[in-house]
Amino acid sequence: MKIVITGSLGNISRPLITELVKKEHLVTVISSNPERQQEIEALGATAAIGTMENVDFLSDAFQQADVVYCMITNDSKLFFDPHFDLEEYYSQIGNNYKRAIEVSGVKRVIYLSTNGAHTNVGNGNLRIHYNVENILRQLPNNVSITFIRAGGFYHHLLSFIPAIKTKEIMESNYGGNDVVLWVSPLDIAASIAEEIEAASKGRNIRYVVSDELSGNDVAGILGESIGKPDLKWELISDEQVLDGMIKIGMNPDIAKGFMEMFSSIHTGELYVEYYRNRPVLGKNKVKDFAAQFAKAYNK
Image 1 (cartoon, rainbow, N blue to C red):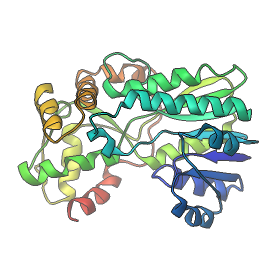
Image 2 (cartoon, helix red, strand yellow):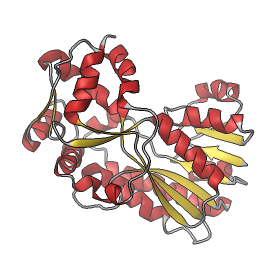
Image 3 (spheres, one colour):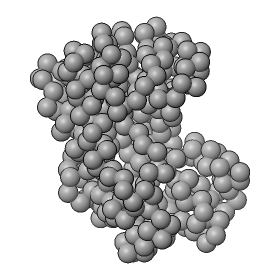
Image 4 (cartoon, one colour):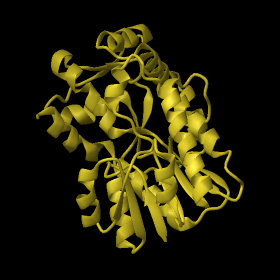
């Protein structure tokens, strides 16, 4: 098959590209960075250099594709831009994908969404994926779409390193004894590859999670990896979390969105739909990620 992959050579796209090329699919990889072209071609894929903001570029890149894998990325530095509208940005890119799919005639789409995208109420920043899912649902019925609703990425745990070093704890308005859903990019890549070859029809939702662990269980695993076996994950208030993010310069609207998202994990509201559609867990566990966490901690 001719397959177009967005996300350049990120944590999901790189293993996905490798798997698809190994199975002799014709893979085109979209990247905004010209310096990635040589590396993409070394993996056996074709590079298409351009941006998600350019609908004409996307339309050309999608031409004659059997399947398109769409994901949306943004520079996290933009979270500290007081003028950056996260919701508007995701909707803009979602509409660009929709238009490019219509113009190119693509009939199969896989979109990387998130757990919690079933609603736009009470899930904070995750409503951006609810919006994009609904934009893509406006495509004609003969376009098959699979929404990959993933758990929280393991690499988000790296954000706790400063607090561990200064306070010797992990802390947020979720965690402690709360069960949290985590996912490895390797398991996401494997799920996308399966969906591509499954040739699913219609509109489908696939939840992808690698581990279901309490915050304290995660703290114990990560603490063991850095020589702090008594590490705990403590709960603090919504107000403390929001105030902390604003104090380091985060856009207040985005900070509020993160606080609401984390709070919905603590209450369990975020995971209601997941447990109704609980999948088989992926192979890559928090214990497997611990070595990467320790390397970052000790850097």
